[in-house]
Image 1 (cartoon, rainbow over the protein chains, first blue to last red):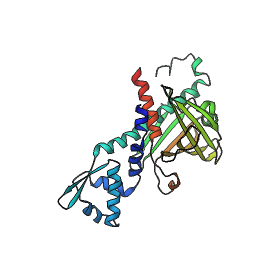
Image 2: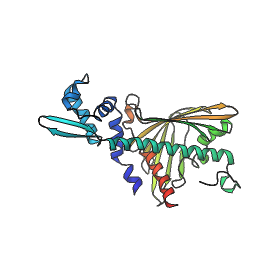
Image 3: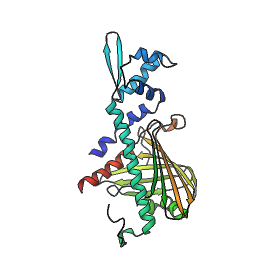
Image 4: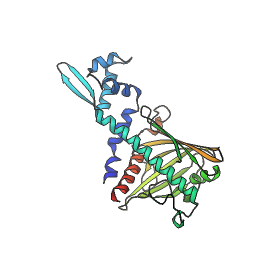
Length: 124
Length: 161
């Protein structure tokens, strides 16, 4: 079922990948151009291996793709995957907007909204 | 309109929703503190929530399940970290197994609710956070599959109409 398909590990993996500021920065840098891992490594006060590890987390989550060109590994952000993460947040916004609507309804119509005779709020 | 503003922070993965209700603060608080009221708005109509345990005290747990259109059951658990009736509530929301125990390796979100009297009504600020590796290290996970699940449930409901 759709619900289960979305609530799976992949979603979790994406958000875990996005939870780190360095990885978010790598994503931004790799939207335009395709820097190599070694060029990326120069941008951060950390070892090449550490940056390589961050890229690997992003790759596992499907947020970047790596392409070998000669001796270099070029990194590119998968804009579609990033969009899907944003979309998840947008959908959560929708969830809460609807919750607030239901709260309003309950407050306006007391404890028996099913028995109410209302002209407003009856259409959903 | 109840919702006054929505702030979606894509970088920090937080969502802040501010809403005004034309009701006294105690009544708005009851929507959270009374399990019979809470279960009427927490889940979407297609995934109604049933509250099992409801210990709204620091260190307490709230357990619930949502029933889908095909009879599918999804369990959830809140771990309450702070309560100050009727002004504030803070908890983590996570998936649970059928016994009500949190499922390891599943997403957790931290939710902070603030209520304040305003112009004869009540303003509610709800903040949902999905990251913070520093203070959520023990929670291990970030994510929002719970929100996704509910949103998808709502979309399903729209589609079948």
